[in-house]
Image 1: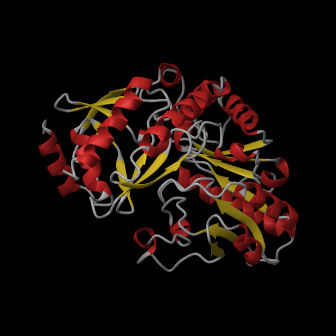
Image 2 (image 1 turned 60 degrees about the vertical axis):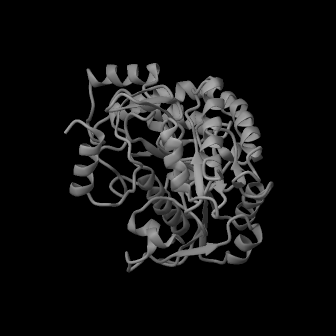
Length: 403
């Protein structure tokens, strides 16, 4: 098996069809560019759904991984290791929080936040046993575990996977009043994405996050921000919440925290929240392992320079200005912030997948969602020239359906 066609055929025949990939087989990657098995190069305009904020094979991240691979990769949390303290202190300083609880995948981090919120609700807020509720948003995407999909409003993620986990109230995303009305004596937290990624890079109304913060503080409940896709430089700030000067009670992080090398996730909160977890009540054999911590430490160092946040903000202005020119020319709407955009294709012109395939043929890789939307999230290390070239290819791909 050496050709793309052969590899795709076997992959489709021997793996579950839980994804619908574009027909490209990537062999190697550097920076913002990837190369397929036939040697054709493509500009990566998806970045592993924000996992590759710093590009493929960033030298500092790869060096940290290689050095750690030679020394120690796993101890389990039965013992301490020499990368752990630096990771907890570094990520704690980055978030401004007292404590860190490390896991592996984003979904695990969300599950961790849900468990912590419930336990905090019982032990600190005094909610009656087994009665804790958490307010969540319609259109949310927080992962695909059984508990998380229990409050998904996406039929593909939700339907036929029941029975479902109770304890969640779904309200309208972007409506502070809806949150206010849903709060009662059982409410322990509000969980939201500062920008909804899977839903199509939906940015809430200005002031929404600040109002949610005020509501949670007044009600004595936790504000939990899922910054797995939106955080760590993607939107032009360290966290998307920073755009409104909002500090949630709990940050959920993943994806880019692992530098595109290993899965690393974590939640961050102050001691009065995370202090409710005691030994034996939550954990993971690989969570906070030496290799993961070494990689994450390199990522934290990159973010501490502020260089990547500033670059995402600068290039994001360029990206959104160019995308705005396409509205009315095969594009209905453009949303987003920083180097992150959702582009709604005119459904009478083409589907998002059709445009994504046309874009792939022109050497740019992006991915559709919800039928007519294309998500764009290039690595922050992309050059100005490559960014403009990719947008030109998108314009040409859309125009090809109008001829």
